Image (cartoon, rainbow, N blue to C red; front, top):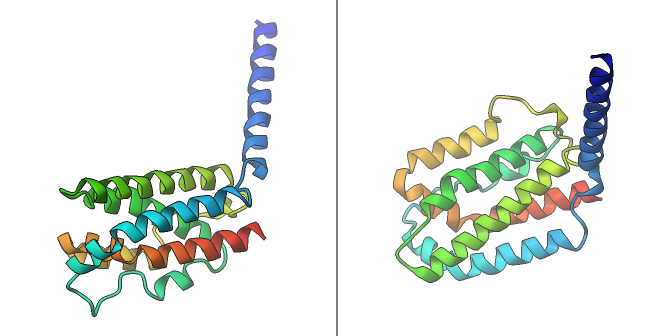
Length: 179
């Protein structure tokens, strides 16, 4: 019985060491991969931007605007990044499906790329200082999510129409963390 316990403890210890090594930053964003992701996001966005911006009749309202610039200061940046990726992947991208195959194809590309970025963030939690994230949503995210809900069905047009703002924020934030 003691032998089985020792073997089990050894296997668990090795596995924990492996997990820590995997999350230590060795598999984090490379200087080549992130720009490729960003290029794919911007390319797909350019192909759908006009469609969604034309449907947005709330031109006096901005969903993202200046809120994003406050979202990456201090330790809250990682939490805000996770919240925004979840927001787009769980709410916006699924709601953005249309009757146009080319639009849906580019929406799917954006969703897939954001999903890959989300996976990279999980693998690089030390790079992003994700160890100290709150359980409650950040104030910036609560404001964005509240406005999105207030816009109801039209919120998706605003959120997709302003993706370029989110991409600019992503670029600044991840570049800052990589440096």
